[in-house]
Amino acid sequence: MKDSIHKHLVAYISDLNTSKEIYDRLVGMFKFSNENQILFLKNKLKDIKKGKGEDIQSYFMRITEIKKDLLSIGEAIADSEGAHSHCPWKSSS
Image (cartoon, rainbow, N blue to C red; front, top):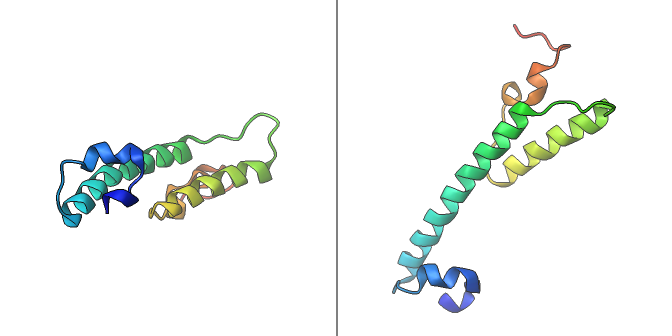
C-alpha cells in the first residue's frame, strides 16, 4: 500500500504497519484539510460582492463556482447560506 502513496505523503505514514493505520492517518489528515477548505469557501461565499463594472451573469457565475467547489468536497449549501440571499431584490421574510 505504501508504494501507491504519493511521495510527499510517505513521511507521514512510514512509521505505520497496517493498511488500517495508514487509512486512518490519511483520513485524519485530509478531513482536517477539507474542514478548513469548507470554512474558507463558505466565508468566500458569504463575503462575495459584485465587482464594479461586473455584469450580473459574471457575478452569479462566481457564486456558482464556489458552490460547485463546496459540493465537490461534500458540502451542500442551502440557498439561504449563499451570497444571493443578501441581494436587494430578494425579500428576506
